[in-house]
Image (tube, rainbow, N blue to C red):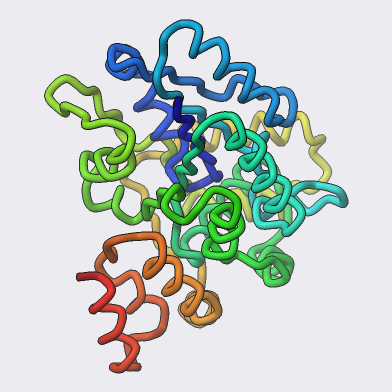
Length: 306
């Protein structure tokens, strides 16, 4: 029996994946694949939780399991700055998560599904999410805080691979979703099952994100109405989000200098991620990482992509 453990990192298409699984659950179950989505919202997930679900599924004649969880399995997104919180990229969180997978792997073949995302757009998306959910800090404060966090997807995946093997870490780039939702789906599930897209329901991307106008409105609200109680502030934020139109500009909030600095910092790490764990390279993934002025590196990266 094989367990596919989808670590749904915030802002990496996890809601989209869960919506796809929810809408097509019958298609998976017809192939003897059990689907479990966010069954432990109120507490941290343990290896024993996963093993217990697997035992029940095996008794019901399932051959594979897709288990998808968000923060309760690996930690919170960057931007929640409180003592004691488990950050998604925190070293202790990664080791704890890797050990969880190792314990599950002792009883069942375990494969790790993860969607990764360029660090610049990932951080900006985390910031927008936190702002629209009540955070009052500025972009500058956010960037100063997260600068101390190691946002290396490679380090995270490598830690897990050291327990279950490189071949069992199945990584998909978020950027593929932007170019083709169907290709993203088939790539993500390529090792699980072949999906007949004629019979599948492919939902639209779930989270709309925050427009430039919306963030500017929230900043104005923060600067001019500081004394409004948190309860009422959340109500007002909900109204702002509800009335955001889909065609609002999604212009990047990050200045180009910040984008370049962030991506240069993780350029080598991202290169290792793709060369070791991903068989293809999304268009402009590395060039946008500030490497376009280095022809030697660009040539090597193009070679990796083919």
